[in-house]
Length: 416
Image 1 (cartoon, helix red, strand yellow):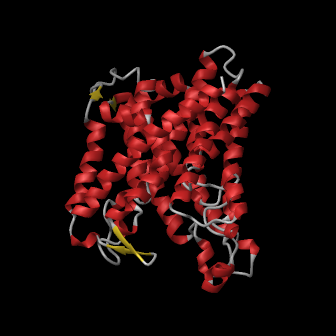
Image 2 (cartoon, rainbow, N blue to C red; image 1 turned 45 degrees about the horizontal axis):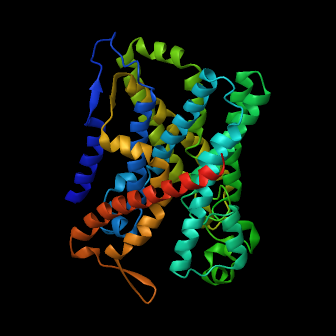
């Protein structure tokens, strides 16, 4: 489908537009490759990729080609965690850079970096999505409303990122505030990240432990299940919570040892870059092998939760997200791009991410004819519907994000 290639071309153009190439000479490198401006532009590209990832998961996009055929913009379907890894990398990178350059950086850290930057936006988002649920008359038990409002469960299923980030930021503060050895801090951060992943491997995608063995395979059992037994309810209930966060650890390390890392890659740069590309491709294949032969969704094999298979898949996949952000960091030494679109999306990355689900819901009338509670696709008449949907989702996401940012600013002024 031509629309797919158009989207791919536009996405690639974000890397090219405004690009600066340091040249092929081994002595020429960008000394600002890890600057705030460069990282913002990269975040903007990643934010665009995340929105396309969410769009690509729509039924209309996945089923366009028919059974066994790739859907529209199918390359984005399984790439979401790599884009989120970019956010985690630069978050970790920025924390260490600030810690090294600002006196008393950790004083008031929880208020400035966790409460204002993560928790206030999270709970403002909870209120916005609660209003949305009330408007469309979503039926939820009282306890579900309570759990969603407190943040124990998610009102917005895409809002897991600030939860994971808040956990990692809090761990960063407690460790680096109280432990003098940086190496010990790094090891403990890595351990916390791995423990989060293992927690998902045990908890799986639903409360598998709450009913009869394999209860989730029965439609009648699903009908009797409590709300908290379903998908995407508890923290770390899903691989998307944990397979990108290891990049946070890489960001910490690269910020701490940036000069040594930059110097190492500058020697025989092109050889090391090609080797890194080969490693990244190999790790991608390893990740695909793990998902195909072991998998995260082992609950549906009929053999129980399949915890061991999840662990194998997790262990075999996380090197890819780490290698991916390292590859981007090394590319930035020679080439980086910044343009009005990437700068705009970079400055609005968290907001567009948090409001993207609402934008998808608002725009779904373009793709589906909702009759009698069933989503009947209307997109097969031509490319018009799916193309319009992509444009509309981006436009609505941005408008909602700007409104959301304004509300966050108002809320943050209350806590000075």
